[in-house]
Image (cartoon, rainbow, N blue to C red; front, top):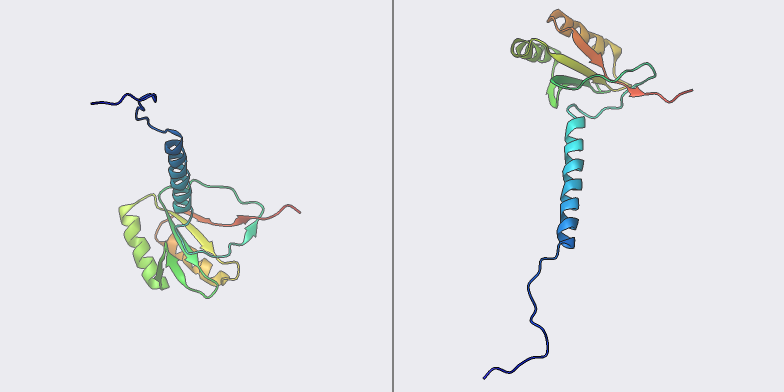
Amino acid sequence: MEIPSNRAKRHARIEIIPLIDIMFFLLATFVMVSLSMVKNRGISVQLPEAQSGAPLERRDQVVISITDSGQLYLDKTEFELSGLVTELSRLKQTEPELRIFINGDHNARLGLAIAVLDETRKLGITKVAFETRLAPSR
């Protein structure tokens, strides 16, 4: 025997508000992770300031980092100058329009930066730029 109830039968329903919260959280996380991946291909150094710098297109580039202690890095791999030249020569053969960004610490030796620039020019790489950060207006 079935006992009648005064309450109406409840139907299952999908709560959409928590779903929207989760989707916004995932979107924000994806944006933050993708932005952090684009920026830093080289080693983190204290860039020198310049007021005349102009932003350049950052696709298909190789980053050479020069630390204040004189270490050379190609992207994030440490090299001696001779090993760097060998690796750049190999990259030049696979990518004829190779772009190089040199980011050196503001305390790095100028002679080492000039040596790296000289070696890239000897290899026929003409698209070389020095990375700087924007100096505050005076």
